[in-house]
Length: 355
Image (cartoon, rainbow, N blue to C red; front, side, top):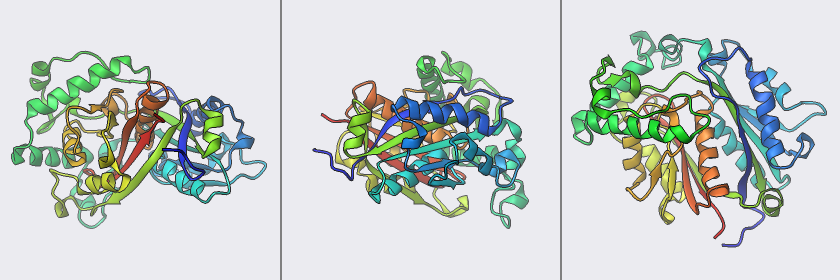
């Protein structure tokens, strides 16, 4: 289908080293990453019409910490800039909408997370609903163990099915230069490991990761000027379910299904899907909710089980799905991002290359 001036594509990207802990600040992680993304599209910062970032003050332990990150992309002379307190993939969504206004033709979206600063067992507990969940001390491992147990009791999956997800993702991650955890794992040995929160084992959890990623978007003809094979975002949708897990069927993801429908996932075959499933069993829920069959290659990057920089993992899924089109010649891919406890919020994007 011929592209129009309202079509928007990913034309450049950069990913920082993804590591267990860095002494760099968020700003220092962002500086070379944002510059690298802009340079990958053959641009300078003066060419960018809009810049938006995603990060979380909770992770930094500092109110308005994102303000200092503006130094990473240069605020003088004054620029058109925004921020979301979410993963960088939601920043990309804002950049996408901004480009649709038609007065600019390039934008940068970035995500940054320094997760090593905090203890997730306490940090995410106080981020929950203050009346029902925080007083319980419901840390993410306990909440996700409940979701995993619900999946097992539904009969939709077994612990072996989930261990096979772990083994496949970490084997795939051997080819990913950004992977923090990778290698060949025996399923029986995984199943023999002790529980952290039954039925969750250590290998079912995402690694703690510091990192940053950035993408460059371009609109219409400008995308062809900047990239030989742009990854066109032909559909993108974001849906939200109730925050309280007790108000949802945790064995499925209605918001993922609705977002996929809104993005047009069912309009054609999906060759590759990059799913944001930080807890191993969630990949099985997402596969079913998205209607993916064995013809779709899932997480060839290793996904969030290979590296999980919170506030960045989602935009990396966007990059990995785009890479399959820009560098590996794929025709149609899917990128998914989640946010909130137990798959509360979900964003789905469909990316396509020209035939």
